Amino acid sequence: MKDFINRQLEISDKLFKVMFDDHKERIRDMAMWAELDASLMRKLNERDAEITRLQEEIAKLKANK
Image (tube, rainbow, N blue to C red; front, side, top):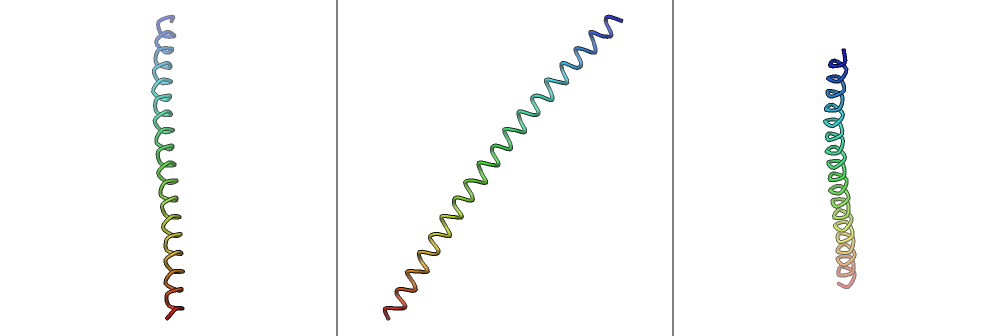
């Protein structure tokens, strides 16, 4: 009976380690995706600001004709 209990404890320990490693990997992946998302949103905001600036410049040029 003692061997059975020890074996179950070993198996539980291995399972815990695997689940812990999986959790760390998932958290790392989520952080990477969040970073990518923030970077893309920043670039889109910069693009939108540039488009607005260019539209204003075009409007000024048309007004001066």
